[in-house]
Amino acid sequence: MTRINGYLGRRHLLKLAGIGGVSLAVTATTGVLWGAQQAVRPQLAAADQPSENPNPVRPDDALKKLLDGNKRFVEAKRNFPDQSTSRLHQTAADQHPFATLLGCADSRVPGEIVFDQGLGDLFVVRVAGNVVNSEIMGSLEYSTLILGTQLILVMGHERCGAVTAAVKDELLPGRIGSFVEDIKPAVERVRNKPGDLIDNAVTANVQLQVEILQENSVVLAKMIKEDKLKIMGARYDLDTGIVSMVT
Ligand SMILES: [Zn+2]
View 1 (cartoon, rainbow, N blue to C red):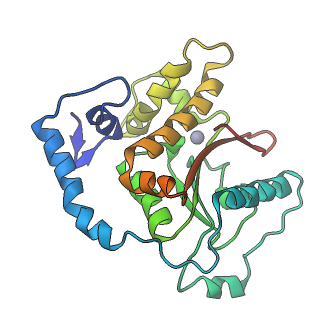
View 2: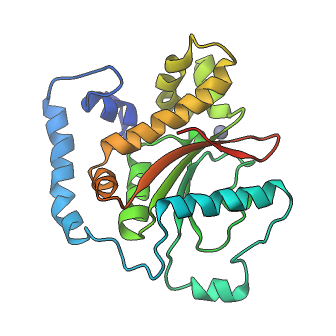
């Protein structure tokens, strides 16, 4: 098991949870892991209500707002909403974003620009390869349970360097390989499918990360069950700027 400065890789979390084709018997290590989760549960219970949002946006409406904004972006008809000084002051003390985005850190895919949104509109988590690990999961639980967004959109993109690295499977320096490892199960899912492997893996990776979010968070699962959350997947076309749904 890899444990660097207390970090436990998501790959191992999945293994411990019996996901990804690897099912492990309960060990002393899993006991420590899940014991730690139990320890924070009483605090979670106290905060187990979404914060008061004066204008909660339902998942389908949030998706429509995003896709409408992307259409404006693609058609070069951006409104640049919520970017005024008054919006700055309005959001200074509090935030009620209408959607949460998990996207790649790639410099060409900034959420607020490609969806034509502004200050306080989106809770954006970006990491190379748009992968889910425990820190990412925690951020997404915060944006939904505490801030009250009802949509998490996981968005990959064309020609993603992280996905390409996972396909090439080369030795990488430092910790670059950490997120690449998280993408490899998605590559395996499409390895023998027709078409371009990297492009197929971009879509498969979005689907994989959506599944991980849906299946590995008690907090998110509860919100989904209560019809307070949808988790969906999309991909971004670098050539056209168009966002397409994949789940
Ligand atoms: Zn990328």
